[in-house]
Image (cartoon, rainbow, N blue to C red; front, side, top):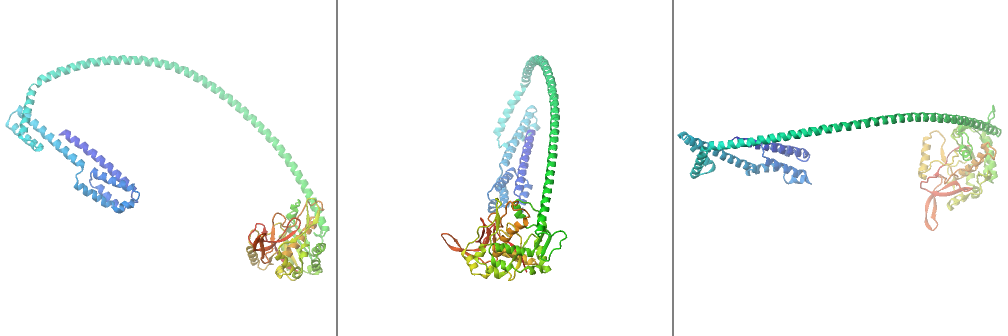
Length: 602
């Protein structure tokens, strides 16, 4: 009975452990499937786990959750049969079919009950044999009947069991003799065991003694070896310490040597820097003195030429003097290898400028332009304060004034006259000469000039006027289409409320600017002719074009061997020794810009 109860407890403990493991696995799988399962399904699983379920039922639920977690399409499984219905099906099957472990438990219970009833019957029978009383006989009969009920036996079986018990009782009468024999045999075995134990103890003592001697020998040997190692280690440490001291001494000497070399190098460097500084200061002083002498000499020559006012001199009314103006000739001088200040005082005598231009046009045979500028002296002397203010403001920003004829003179300018607007140029050989040629390309543009088309001078005043423009090497508003450039000029004029209007330079103004600018560079340089290395007209640095966006689009043939035309607009540039008037496409080009100007009617 005791053995059975203990086994049953162990089985129950193992079963509970298995159920707890399955519950933990179910909780882990449910936690991973919470986003997939509905709240109803999760509650169903919780209720299922709260009830006392068998290990088989819990294992079935684990398998079900595993199928759901590894499914390719989880929702497909849930759509076919929800988790709630699956759990209900598991409970129903558990009610109909008895689990295997329950069957096994039932069988074990029957076997243990049979064993227990058998043992009770044997004890009662023994007691009846030794004490054949009526009470003992009734007790034996009752235990035998219980055994028959449990095992389904018969009376014959009971009699055979009784005869077996009688033989067992006869054997028990010989029990003292058997016990004596067993005791004698046991004593003999104990004596043999004692002798064997003594032998083993002797052998163990001998072995321990031999091990002790061997351990002492090894310890002595290890001591000697340790002494040898310690001696060698002390010698090695002493050698390492000596090498370390030697390296430290060498390192100190090296650091001191490098420090001395560095100090010596720094001293020589300071001496070189000081010499270089003194030399540069001397060069700077020499350059400043030379530039100051050149400036004084240049200013003296400019004053002698009437381009700057003399000290204490009262300026005539036709003279425009600006103290801090942006130098319009800086780019040309820099290209020629001459450094001039970016800001300086500039004086423009408009009457002298007019005469200067007439000489330039006379030299080129432009009689109509020369006649148009004749007799403008009084008008230039009597300009209003407002017009002088406009001129001063433009000059301060770097513009140059050029006296221009009216619309009629420009319109009557022939194709041959335009070819005579050749600027002066100076090359590295230091020879100043007039450009050798100028040409106009494009039949449509030539026809406009020959036919005196009014579109050529659509926005030019009828009277002579002063053109104010900045002579930069590259034009403004580059990398834009023609329409974008026109729109930009209109936007700029919208923002100039109450101020002079801005225009885009046309063909005649461009030719005059190229001609007069190179003449002004020579006049304004203030140097001897041999001192200026070189200078070139505007738009001579690379493929730079100035568009005449005031003109209309002109149809231009696509090219040789091709039929058709494309829209283009006239442009101007300086190219290989002369001016070139041509047409370029309407699209944006990195070099096609616009030259902006202001006009002041005289």
